[in-house]
Image (cartoon, rainbow, N blue to C red; front, side):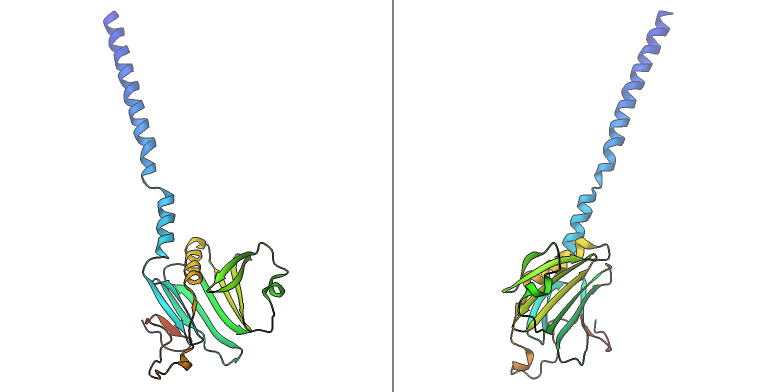
Length: 202
């Protein structure tokens, strides 16, 4: 009788040890795939393989290879440039416009806005705020208003990174019309720029 009790006790002890080992290994296995890693990968995807876009209006900036830049044709002489950045793999977009403006300062344009932060667009003092989920950046340069609107469509991290690339790399250059090389018909150093109403060049 005592042998049977001892055997049962040993069996119960072994079962407890096995149960503890199994529970520890199963609780640690889900940690192999961390959501933080996925977020970092998504963020870095907007920073790798940058290309440069040069606009005929006289500015340039860098953007990821996974993003395409489209120029919107317009007959409105007050609009110097109208661009849209999109991605075939990530919902959302960024629009950039350079238009003629009578505003004397940015304060007049953002006086009714809240949560305004100061940023830079090239050597210009710019102001940024959020409105209805969009991130809006405004900069004013000698009668020209630059407006950059990020519409992230739930992909805020990716499009924020693209926007940061544009802002940090934005520089002013001489307009194409002032350059002597009349054979330059493209407004970009790459082939990912398309024109609205024209065939997209891949």
